[in-house]
Image 1 (spheres, helix red, strand yellow):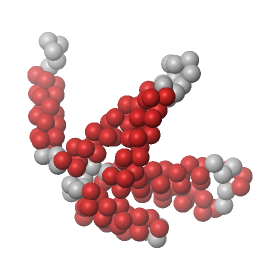
Image 2 (spheres, one colour):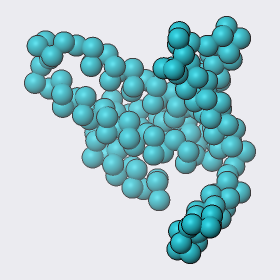
Image 3 (cartoon, helix red, strand yellow):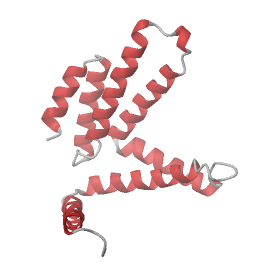
Length: 159
């Protein structure tokens, strides 16, 4: 830390204080979901590590990864919604370029924007009930392809 200028050091300290303040205000539900996300992400990174001769996980870690994903599907409606939208995007991207209709790219772009809203809202709900309400509201807006409504919802709920 000797080489850091005072402004950089102050910025790092401020970031540390803000991070601790945010974590201190975290609800039990938010902490549980954050912990599940981190554990799953750690296993996913290990699973896809390109430096390994054969990508993958040992069987016991793969079972743990599947357990975590299942737990998130049950306990995190926002994560479940994000997974569904990502699956829709993957299905649309699998369509060969020559077979895509004019609306294809527009729908993909809209789904990407919905996904950004979902990810920005993922850590906001304080309870599973609130997460379910958020996911339901966003699911309805997605099914109506109401991106303006979703953006308005985000402005209201993601302050």
